[in-house]
Image (cartoon, rainbow, N blue to C red; front, side, top):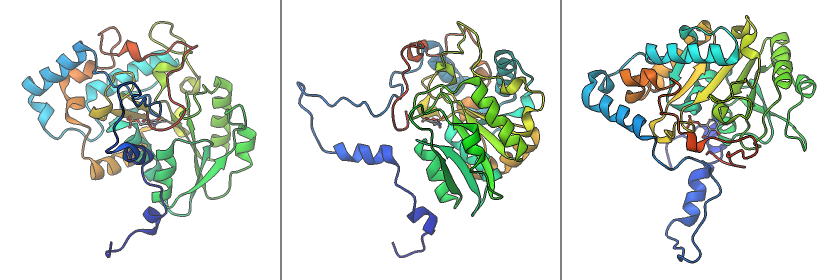
Amino acid sequence: MTSPLNPAFAATEPPPVMEARRWITGKTFPSDRPLINVSQAAPVESPPLALRQAIAEAALNDPDAHLYGPVLGLPALRAEIAAQWSASYGGSIRPEQVAITQGCNQAFTAALATLAGPGDEVILPTPWYFNHKMWLDMASVTTVPLDTGASLIPDAAACAALITSRTRAIVLVSPNNPGGVEYPAEILSAFRDIARTHGLALIVDETYRDFDSRHSIEIGGRPHDLFADPAWGDTLIQLYSFSKAYRLTGHRVGAMVASEARLAEVEKFLDTVAICPASWARSRPCGGCATSGNGWQANATRSSPAAAPWPTASRN
Ligand SMILES: Cc1ncc(COP(=O)(O)O)c(C=O)c1O
């Protein structure tokens, strides 16, 4: 390459999932010794029929499904998430505090782009989700590792000791990828308190929320009390993915729950990189996507507490 390369990109690792795929390109595996891919737990079956029908219906009959739409997503879907999250987390979340994104990864990059620039620091517990580190590297933001020891549960006091004048955010993933652990509610509250005391953002990536043993449509319950705090919006940014529970990895639908002020900044980022979420996620039928009991959630992919299905590494 002769044209310039941003040194931050040169220093960033290549996408590991693509690299792993290249290892087996051109290789054949005999039927008595097939390759069993245990590196990813991405749902590979199609979404439930009812959801596929709704997607097809939108493509065929909803003219809006083919047009640019609101940058922060379809109002009906934002309202549905706000209502469901308020009920399931025991808090108050308004539709204006929800943004629909092209996947949780985009939600993460959008949130971080509004929070931290070159030379700033963000604390990530180890082992981290590789795309979080890759974004921070490409944005020239310094990743500060927080060792989680053998338990894989991060310690808030240890985190506090890492905070400097350049720290902008703490990122937690629960249930965790790659660790698989569910962070106890009191741990999450302790991190919220530390973030608030230091004026930082606490980002909680809940991509695997629907697989959390403490939360499900069937048993109710909640994995944490962060949204029960009336002032949650001053500190908390929650990220969500439709990829796993709805088997929609290829459709790229995620969400961010944050203060309206934060989302006003996020809107600048999303407008510039994507303009709006993927078309079907903005179509009218998708307004009911998060509605429980419509058969759209891929129950077959969900876990029991004893059998957490997320992977031990990689995007999944
Ligand atoms: C922790 C975490 N966040 C985000 C993602 C990506 O989610 P999405 O497909 O919604 O971009 C993944 C897995 O792919 C993940 O493990």
